[in-house]
Length: 606
Ligand code: B12
Ligand code: SF4
Image 1 (cartoon, rainbow, N blue to C red):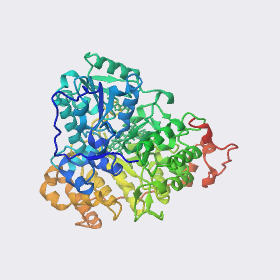
Image 2: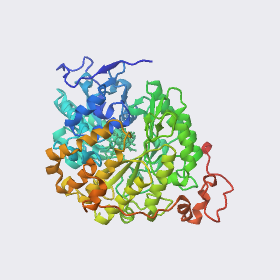
Image 3: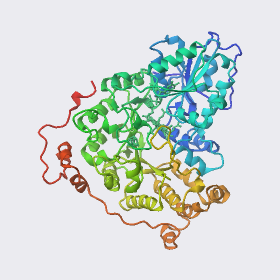
Image 4: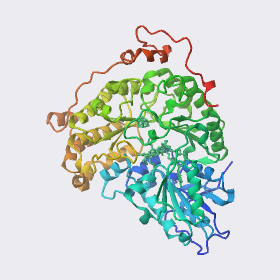
């Protein structure tokens, strides 16, 4: 099957007919920023565009000259859109006719917005770049703080604002980044009538569209309810960006800074997931990614076993069926937690056997796979300080005590690395109340990873109080100039570790070049303040770490006392032993195998 391709040249401005499209346009037009819709080159391109400032767009253009190539349906609508747009579309199609609703790329709005249009609905992931990890790199890298993705999001809103029929329709924005509009009060500037927080499946969302179509005034902000059970969640039956299909909602570990954890913990039915996978393939997608906060809870939500003891059989069965679906050539993991790797190393091994052949990620110097393939889920490390971890994420490592968090991270990473999983791990720098001692504990952990030859791609970001979370009102660091020498050391050490040769072929060395001494002399010195100087010298390699330590310019790190897996298992409450799998070994003394294995996959997801 082949689909029409068209290159969208940034320089070409479409000729807009002042009378609008010949058919009067669609009643409801859905869209999303181009940079959030592209289904090109894997996840990293979107993550890079969320973090790099617009003046560095040339780096992306050079690396991915075809990133603006998008695919179309026969009628000019978008062949793929982010999963959020697809679900808004699906939700609306419960009430409106197919030819009333369309999802299109931003450059094609003029083809669908006309005198008949009453709603333009935009889904956004991160429109203003004020979320964690995204804002921090743009401010480190230069004077223009606008990330590439924000630039394109703003372009989209400007196009909507300038549309000749703007007074006829309402602009409704939703998606995980909608809160950024609310917090920055950019309604007028971006010409937005209403921001919806919550899911499109809600009847309140449909009610809002009804009002908009009748031309009624809309409230600025609407909060709609999240479905409480599996049946309430819809699935895409068309193609989604990166083949994203939801696997779970919510998480259950209750980290205080987390937004998705506020949603109910639901694992979605396997048959619906598989239908959505097949729909993607039917529409030309070759890649699939199951969206989740923690892939390991799937199959273990509301069973007799606590969710943090993964259901090995169910997970292996689900992922096997996905990667073995005819037409699925690539599969990418999204998010997970690390404690399950300590709980059930054989699960990781079995998943590796299933998933590695279809992984598009290669780490030639790290992977022991014959084709050097690797898996790279996103995992939260956040802090190496037990004191800080207790404060902000006391259940992050369950079933293990948060006192053992550094050991859980190191042991988990060992198991993952042994099975060719090299996760991207996020760290939060500048948590409210973070002391030098806390930062030193995190640096200790990073040095320990290095000593043990463990690899994760470490992504430090500055604490951002996220809307609605239990830390929403807390203040952290607001400018990179406020970072202490230790906080800078932590950030630059993470990046230095990431650049160990060969891990990333393009953006690693690129980041190195940007962070080099020349840049520092040119602008970073004044931008980031004097505390940045020695850590940057460490990062650039101009002076060796040993010498900088000897000179007292950077912190040298303390050796850590780490628990082995056996010791970690022995520290579990005896009532939890029944959920351990003896075939992993390291069982606590006195462990008696359970008579029945855990819930089997046959009971899950149907
Ligand atoms: C897959 C994913 C990605 C993928 C692909 C994204 C894509 N374009 O498709 C990749 C890896 C590229 C990615 C990147 C990033 N992501 Co992301 N991502 C996710 C993940 C796991 C799933 C998103 C998804 O598709 N969910 C399924 C769909 C159906 O849900 P949804 O989009 O929320 O849509 C529902 C509602 O929001 C609503 N809705 C959506 N749109 C609209 C529109 C209207 C008008 C209405 C009424 C309703 C509505 O209805 C839908 C359901 O019916 C989420 C976590 C999660 N579970 O949501 C994180 C998440 C959204 N990402 C997050 C972050 C931080 C990022 C990055 C900034 C990370 C980084 N530093 O690089 C970048 C930003 C990328 C960018 N382009 O700017 C955060 C968002 C934080 C925030 N904005 O406040 C989340 C919540 C993860 C987390 N645990 O913190 N991400
Ligand atoms: S483990 Fe991750 S998804 Fe779960 S609550 Fe903590 S931060 Fe949120």
